[in-house]
Length: 476
Image (cartoon, rainbow, N blue to C red; front, top):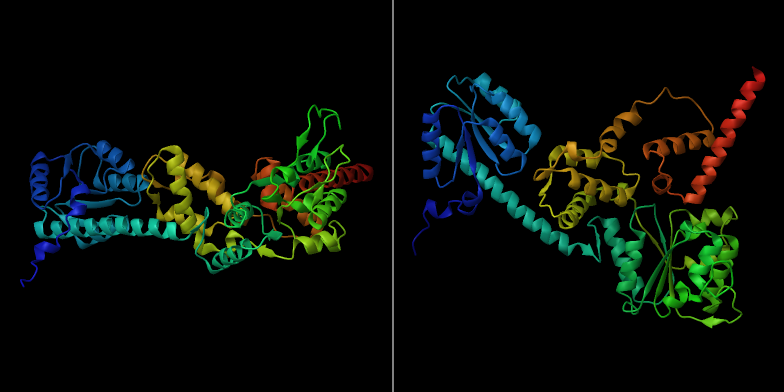
């Protein structure tokens, strides 16, 4: 048995797809370096035009550049700065005839991968190229492993590897086997509807229909018609008889999002559905029997709502016999890299792009963000960044401006002063509305309240403000 030679371990695959660019205004140096790199098994791209190389770097077609420090149009350091601004992951190797230890350290401090003296030593150049090629190949293999890991950790459209999310997935699997009501509790944007869909999908009635209703998006009369159906002529505009969602999903599941927003009268009707499994269409005396599984969701503490008299206690106990608490994104920070990859993959398909990932500084910003909008906010950020990005990686410039400036804006606040909890709440609502540029739906999501509750806060704030103005006017 013969021993393997060192050449048998030579990196072959990366060399075929790894293209070093050579940037020098000296045609002789271009020819010499190009020939040497070709002999090493790479396919170099020699040029004297720095703008051409910067364009290749911007669009991710060049991962390594050997650039001469002294050039008439653009010196090597200026090229280095511009290249790193365009793609922080690019490898730039500076070359100069005047080599000193101080100049080499300065180049590395500014982001260069190496600093080589001219004429370039072939052995040193080969090692540098092979090291970068090995790193490139390693990242390629890690990406493939991450994609496989993403598939393994996906739970019916939801991804997570944190202990809290693994516990949610495990409990959801257990609950799904039994035909019972479920209450999902968690902040807005955490994926309660996705969990509800997963429970339905893996349940014994997974092949039956699933009906989804957002209780905070409708008035009481419209919600009643939506859920229970109505007879023709039962109210103005009822030109035909229509079954409600309970009839539509009979034998399957109905998901009631933001159930806490329902009125006491509607809560009494929902309790009858759960207890007696029967409904009445609006305008009809006929009682209809149904068999549905009810999954409800809320972003508030239902027990506190019961104590405050805003939610029926008997309905609360009916709904909360099985309760699943969905954690906020701040409670599962280790899932953010996985979620970023998941949303990026989805956006690449949706927008016809091939973005490989995020730069380290972009990832750092995302990891330090508080994520008041939870997973939904992260998905929106990745989607916007994917649309804006022009290169192979999402960088800081591609992230929404609000995300980059939010931390600085909220840390540079006015001097602290004592205030009541009501005043503090009004101030917080104003700031969130300002952050959302007046978008009340978005603000309600971030605040974790229904739109009707937000409207009440705004109206109360206006009354308080008007009262203060009147009192100041009276004093004046």
